[in-house]
Length: 378
Ligand SMILES: Nc1ncnc2c1ncn2[C@@H]1O[C@H](COP(=O)(O)OP(=O)(O)OP(=O)(O)O)[C@@H](O)[C@H]1O
Ligand SMILES: [Mg+2]
Image 1: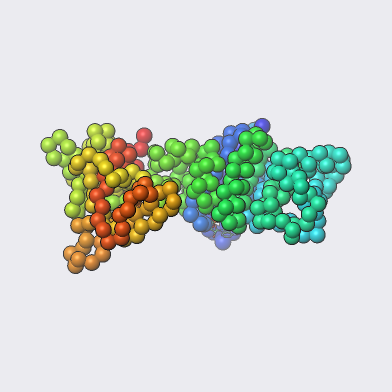
Image 2: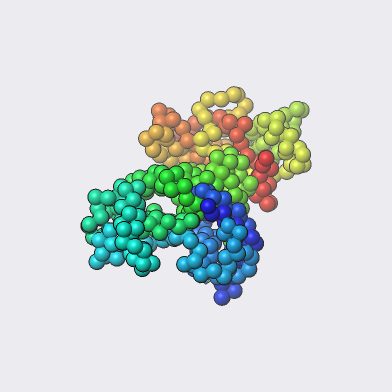
């Protein structure tokens, strides 16, 4: 059992830099919590405060009804896996995994039982006699995780544990971590830059920016219902398209209008836009690349001039500009009319060509141009 709560937690470093501001989060037993956000947003600092490696400047950290602010790291029943884990090169895998338990003077049989069990879970039983130098990157990573598992912590803290593995190994380790979480029934707090890791591993994702939480939600909810433009743009690859538009009402239809094109809003979005008095104003239209299709109802089409075609195997990503949105000099269109579309791989459209794309208007988002707030947030 481990429930963790952070109440108004702040971190100001000695040089006066405020790295984490008013952080509030309830982490429940067996949660797999992911911290994501741009470099420098305070992810590691928050994790290190939970671990006790960094002093909490103000606010409270509770673990299962005990105030932890002043508790020594070793008494917090947490274990941390770092980005640059270190294995002892002169010790075997077995000895590496047993090391922390030997320091704690656990009985030999107990140490042996735990090491062999963890090795079984991580499928490294056949490697126990090897030295780290004779292991692959992924195997070394598993040993590092193994030496944490044997301690049987209440909570696992992981700071970008897979970041120095190649793409294929990362993929394998990701699947293993998901399995480990299920098998150990552990509470895990995990920092990553990797969206795929965030979306596939997390039970809940915490998106941070400039030391502040932007949104905490389950992966699917974060994707479908982002609270603001920052979250919408951060989650998803390629990123959501953002187009500056104005909202205009003509007869019964509300349109979002670019320079040379317009798209009709659905009834619900039109109502929300009216409630927020958006008519006549500039807003940001958000369309995910996968919500642009080659077919659709007339009147919901954009014409894109293709600049780059990326074939990824199962899909093709087209990058370009909205045709007609060129500036007066006839040069390249400004950034505001750039578009990416994710289409089936049989789409043969090439750079230099134009393609008609239909937006799924039931899935678009609208953001306040000043605050970035999602006008359609539910
Ligand atoms: N000891 C320190 N003294 C002063 N500022 C620090 C200290 N450690 C970190 N910072 C600053 O605090 C901010 C948050 O750092 P942190 O390491 O938590 O970021 P992060 O989100 O983990 O970034 P990354 O994704 O690059 O690892 C950064 O701007 C960093 O420069
Ligand atoms: Mg970090």
